[in-house]
Every structure is written in structure tokens, then in C-alpha cells.
Amino acid sequence: MTPVRGGGIAVAIALILSACVAPTPTAPGSPLTPPSASTTAPPSTQPPTPTVKPTPTPEQLVRSFAQKTLAAMSLDEKVASLLMLHSPGSDVGQLRAFVESYRPGGLILMGDNVPANPGELAAIIPQLDLNPDLPMLVAIDQEGGTVRRIRSDVAAAAPQLQQLPVAATSEAFASRASLLETLAINVNFGIVADQTSDRSSFIFPRALGTSPGDSADRVAAAVAGESGHVLSTLKHFPGHGAMADDSHTSIPTSDVSRDTWRTTHAVPFERGIDAGAELVMFGHLRYSAVDAAPASLSAAWHTILREELGFTGITVTDDMLMLNDSGEAALADPVQNAVSALAAGTTMLLYVLPSDPASVGADPRGIVAGVVAAVADGRLSESSINEAALKLLVARRQLATGTL
Image 1: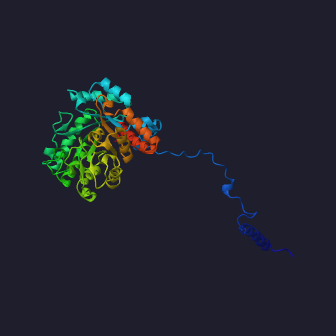
Image 2 (image 1 turned 90 degrees about the vertical axis):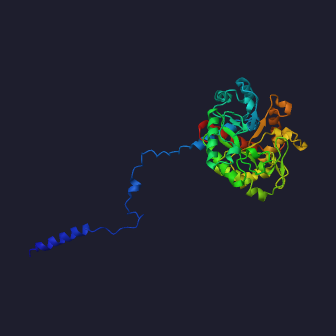
Image 3 (image 1 turned 60 degrees about the vertical axis):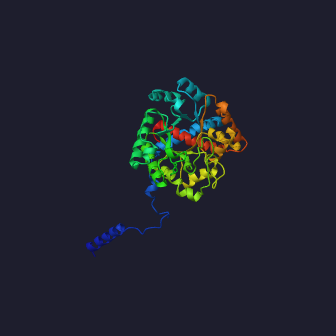
């Protein structure tokens, strides 16, 4: 019998369809699992993406420069950099020789440093810097009125500013700070943050206010006026207004309690700090209820300034020779006074020296040697010297780069 052709076709179609059915999947990793694309792809030949380092900020560059400078300094050089000195006269050669001899971190200009034409200072001062990358702090007492080394400064001073609106204080200090800037002076010891209503007080004619609030308003305005021209200094911490006596010839003493101080004499300093003052000058003043030592030699007062009032800037003493002139036997040794001030936490020591520093027992080399000896015998830590020196190097570098 002849087979039916249609049945053969059906079988063929069935075979074809069975071949098209997908095989049952096998478990991954079994011998029948096809290799993945990742295991068969050739390795990448693209170079790795380079890591982009962030550009250092101006502040970081300044600090790095200061740290490298500090690392290269000897201990003697570090200590010398903590001194702000005065040398009489305006002869460039003599002043330059003085700076080369002692290598201080700063100079203070007194009246005897100001030529008949004060404008000449603009040419004199830059010639005194041994390293333009680290200019010295060049300071002056330019309060206005009775305390002004640049006599051409006729802007309003404390006696007038006590009576004028607060804005007048900002204008007056902007004017004198601008004048100092044109003369290459970068620090003004000019803002008296002491307050008193006692007209018999030594400091009354120089105080910007007669009450804590009035003084604080004018101190803050003075700082704002000086901003961008010079570094501002508040003086005389913790406040000369609590004592009537003159700290140039004695250690004025008050029994004002710390709580009373906090709500009165502290207020102008706190406002000045909040306004951005870069320096605070310590007075040789004794608040016996807080510490028997003068504030300039008191760790307690430095701690109060830093921790309670929040000051992080540069502290500087009033003229250290005033301690010798006080007549107190315990303060007769200039070297020990320097060690005590640094141990208390001050950043910079100020010396208004005569032409022969040895005549007052304060030859800068002797001061440096005495401080170095104190580090060697453990009375001072080298880390505290490094901290103070670095703070000053940072400020000086900021002055050079215009980043302060």
C-alpha cells in the first residue's frame, strides 16, 4: 500500500518544532552554563582617572609657609621673634643695624622715630625688613589727642568722642588708620578699651567711654574703622579703669571681684574682640581678687581672655620695663619677668629700649638667652615658644600676602 504523504510531512514538522524549543536552563556554575561576558571580555587598556588634588586655600598656604619657616629656626631665633623692640632715632642705617643685630619680630615706633616730615617713614620702614616675605609687626601708639606719635593726626580723640555719636569714632579711627597705612605702619596700639567715669583716673582722658556700654560701642566702632588698614589692638587688659594710678610708675591695684569685672571692665574688651581686633595688650595691673600677680604675668588672666572672652589672636605686653620701674622688688629682674610673661601665655614681649639697652638691664640678647635657659631647665616648654612664634609668623606672612 502506498504511504500517505501527509503523515510524513506532519512528522517532519514535529521534528523541526522540537528543535526550536529552548533547552531547560541549568544551574549557574554547572558545566553546561555558558561563560559570562565579563569573564571573556579583554582587559581594559584605558589609563586610570587621575586624582585631582584640591587647590590650597590662601590660609593653608600661609600656614604652610609659616610652619616651614618655624621648622628651620633655632630656639634662639624663635625667642627673638617674640620680641617687639624700640630703638631711638630715625636714621635708616642705625635702625637697620639694630634689626640685623637682634632680629626681633616687631618694632615699636615712639616719637623719637618720627622724622620732621612723617611721610619719610613710608620709605624708612620697608628698608628695615630683613625678609620681605615676613615683614615685621611695626606698631605705634596712635590713640589721637594727647597720645599720638604722628602729630599731623588731627582726627577726633577720646575727649571729643566720649560726647559724639558712635559713628564719629569709626570715622576718626578710619582716618588715623589710613594715615598709618600710608606710612607703612601695620599695627596700631591705639584703641583704649579701658572705661571709667572717675575724672581723677590716669586713664580717663584716654578712655572712649565712661560706662561699660558707651565704651563698648565706641571700641567696636574703632575696630571697624581700622579694619583693612592696620591691625587693631585693645588695651590695657583686663582694664585700667578700675585703678586711678599710673602703671608707668607703679602696679595699680584693685580689689574688684571677678563677677563685677565681668559686667563692667570686661564688656568693652569683649565687644572689641567680637568686632575683630587682632591684638590685645596686657596691662601691668593687679586685680587682687583674681590673682596677686600683675595681669601681664598672670596665667589666670590669659586663660580668662582666651577661654571666657574667646580671643584667639596675638597678645602683647605693655612695655616690660614698666615692671622694673614699679619699684616692687619681685619685679626687678627683666629676664625673670620675660620668663613669667611667656609662662603666663603671652605671645609677644614689648620693650621700649633706650640707645643702650644694657643700661636698663634689658639687652635683648640677655633676654633671649634667659628664655632659652628657662626652656632648658623646664620652666618653659619649647612647645609654648613654638606656638607663640607660629602665631606671629602666620600674622607676618598674612601681612606680606594681603590675606589678614
